[in-house]
Image 1: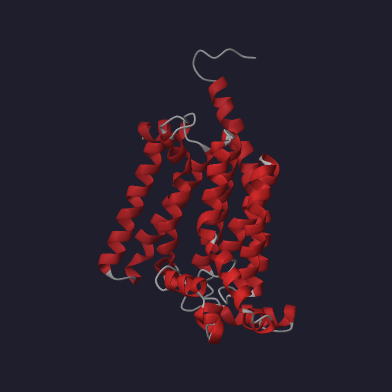
Image 2 (image 1 turned 135 degrees about the vertical axis):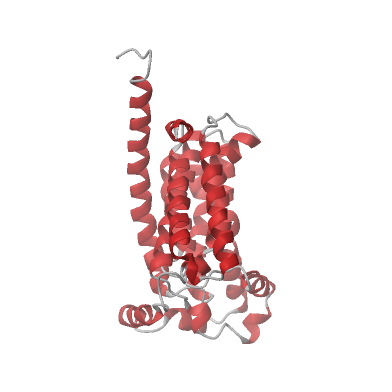
Amino acid sequence: MNWIRQRLATAQPADLVFIAYVSFTGVLLAAFGWKLEPGLWIGLTLTHIALVLFGLWVSGLPPRGRSIGGFFRDAYPIASVVYLYWELRYLALLFTDGYHDDVILWLEEAIFGEQLAMTLSQHFPFFWLSELMHFFYASYWFLLPLALVMLYARNNLSGFRSLVFAETVVYFGCYLIFMFWPVTGPHYQFPIISGELADGAMYKWVHWMLEDGGSKGAAFPSSHVAVAVAVSLVTWRVDRLVWAVTLPFVIGLTISTVYGRFHYGIDALAGILAAVLLVWMARTLQSWLERRSAEKVGNGPGSVPV
């Protein structure tokens, strides 16, 4: 227990959120994973134990200056979302017997007067636009890494860590909603775009990537939109150059999620709102955690009151 307390005492804000999330979901798996196949239940639970231990170990490593090791020491919570997103397909099965697309479809009709995910590409059925939209959708896979690398390369380490922390909160906040209130999204409910638009190289590549890369039930709110908008919200405050470079991708990605029938319009709207709320929560939480850390250092053995 002393080892754990020592590690938590030196942890960065993103470390604490990572450890809290994988611990919480690990407890859920241990308690309710009996609904899954036995081998899967054991494997997922053991993986979470390993993730908690890894998070505690990294928490004991002090922040470094600019180096490859320092980059990954601070950014590992973002790298972890690849696995944590994949496992949502199983976590969502633990707490619900079905999905909630019927509610979202009703809201979509009530707010937009149509099923926007189905009709947007029909209103604008241009090959060049479809390819551009699918490129923007694919930009999700490099948008956040691009922003992080730019901040790090510009020696804006405080901005870099602020973005890592905010995105960690955004990702895990969305994942908790997926877990307890899953929505499959139009990718599973509607026919995919067909005809000439389906002949595009970007269209084919994106759909190939999604064949086994998605987690059914992870549509509302759109984490693609939430993560992208969070990039803009944070970089506007910490580095206007990074904000300007990434803004076109944020706008294009938001529209593309609906145009390509990957998310309902409501999903995208909820993603924007989730980003605003969760980034505000992250900033408030980060300030509080940093104040507590400073107070502990100031009250430690041998400290001198100021």
